[in-house]
Length: 117
Length: 106
Image: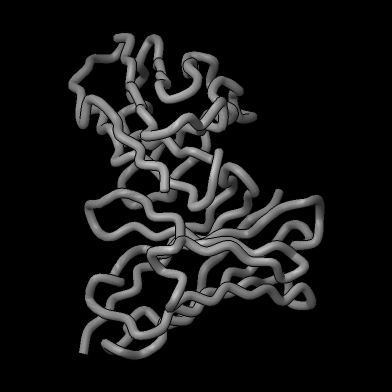
């Protein structure tokens, strides 16, 4: 079965760029017609959909983050990535990657990224 | 953007109880409504999609109903492993959005 795993720096300085990669295992990222998504969750708070990428590279972003977000896919590595620029403390959160077009399943375990100097 | 609200924000219940959680959307989302369960320190788990379709492997004590702007998740015969936070999510239009969550506590 498909599994997802987030990786990347856990500590990012303010104004810098947060970069995370999601590695898909147990199946090809090209299988079926799925989008691949990023979602985040600040500590003790709810879930925020960041955006998604299709295997062709087509993307959709949350307008609240669109000016700072880039999501890309590398089908040769079975990975997709998140880049969030000009981060502030408000971007501190657990970041999840997930498979899905309308609903998201499965999810990666999540990775806590802290924005601090 | 579509705003999602949930009620109650928390509910206290006992094993064996029947619990219902309501989710309201600020606009019509037809039947594009999903429910997730999240336990502390874990990723959310998809329970129900398309308002009432049970995800594979999810116990039948979970059920969903509703349409348009008002939806309900019902847990019958609450089990110890069901104590968690539940989120609704609309998938009718981008950007997708989640409700603030309902914590089911003992």
